[in-house]
Amino acid sequence: ACEAKFTYNKISNACVECTSSRFVGLIVVCVIGTALFLYSLIPMFSRGCGPFYERLFDRLKLLMQVDVAKVKITWVTITIISTVPSTVEIAFPEPMATLIYLYSVVEVDIWGGLG
Image (tube, rainbow, N blue to C red; front, side):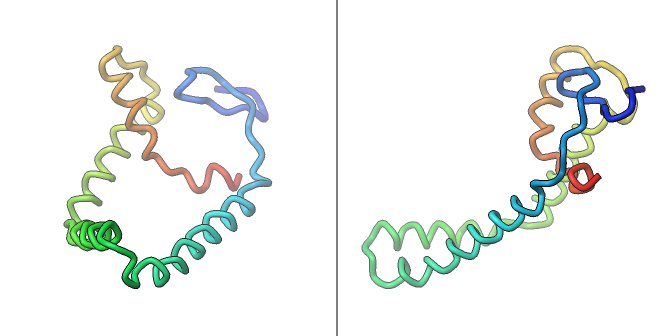
């Protein structure tokens, strides 16, 4: 167990000082603003801008046909695998430790930034 104002970091395998969540609102606003800006650019690029953009939109249409259920199942499986070491508090051997480290990228902890 870690001392007060410290939390266990499974990547560095040590207790680290808790980070502040005062920038969470700013980050959320920036992400939403960027998404809205990019969405506003779609009409500008979709009107006869050449063969490159036509091929790009054709590929985006193909991407939209991906089976979402399979993506969700894969996402949940990878997330479960990446949280096993912190749940059972076991240090795994090297091949598994590296795999879990790579999978930890998809682990989203929305409550961790708010506490």
